[in-house]
Image 1 (spheres, one colour):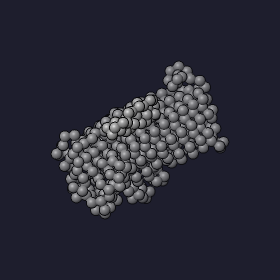
Image 2 (cartoon, rainbow, N blue to C red):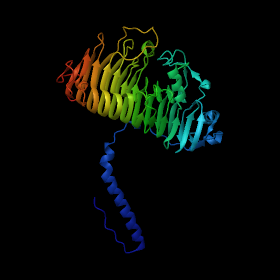
Image 3 (tube, rainbow, N blue to C red):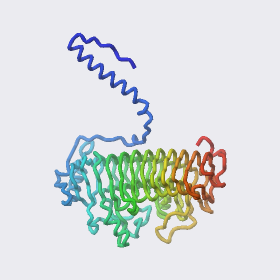
Image 4 (cartoon, rainbow, N blue to C red):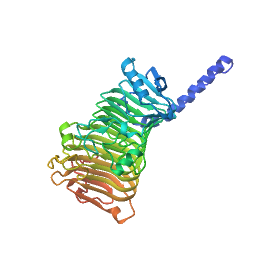
Length: 459
């Protein structure tokens, strides 16, 4: 790019010269970076960020950020104001720096919960006063125990146009008290999530840090048009069931550019549990998982095991995993019914992993004894490609069901390297598909070259 020569014989022309140099420099930078910008693929445009002119602060409603004062009433008063005044374009609820101890609260439509740098929303550990809500209809009971379940710290039901964002402020679930009850088997009901949206649409969660959730961290269930981007999710390696993001019977979900290090699956796509999920019949569909980095003793990217409403059209790509139990885990069970189909997982790097890939039809428990053992899931058209793993103890296993073999399981350019005898052993049964450029050599059930159909080249 060439810049125009500028005559500098006067002060006025000098100003023009400086402006022209600045514009020329900016143009050069834009030219240099245009290709890099063009390479960033994102699904976040499904829910545009809303900028709201009406602002209120939690301190306007008695909020005190000393880490000791309970602010549940302040949050509820502030959100009540947003819901009832209904300012055009919605309202920002600003959380300034400080530590705001609180119990559960419900959000409302057309609002932004904005956490400033240094702001912490901290869950109370007074578990006895935690509100109970009904079980999810697609689960029939609490996920852990019969009966209801504790409401999430930040909850929304039947909402639209809600944003949780800020300057990487923190939402602290203080889950250790709940984990202790779980270990001691003194829980009365299923533990709460940090964030749960039900029956909601046009949701954004971005630029926040979640830590120490009592149970799952982010749980959109029966939702559509959800963006989860630029989040950090942290919990100890041994914290029970602290899944990172679990989209559940939801569609058009975008999960991108996040770091997750927890005690359970980093991202797990779900759709209901056995006969209850079959009856509710709401699938998870059109979900993108992209540029996620993390570690976990369980799975990096998981599908299931609750798959009864069906799961389809899932793309996971550009995933980086360290110190995980299973890199890629598709899991279901008898009694689930439903389907898992049109799954693509590509461009994954994993290191120090117990098992690289597992696709299994014998994983997960049941809500009760009423499940139908003849309700067998259908698993088909799964593409796993461009996978590189180092320090992999076991490369993988693909084990379908005798009454419902898995079909169209396609592996391409998969290299899972280890340094033990088990590092060269695949285990397969009741499966068909194809494998090309797979190392170590895959099991015989996967043909050595792709046929026409689901495993046709190119994938």
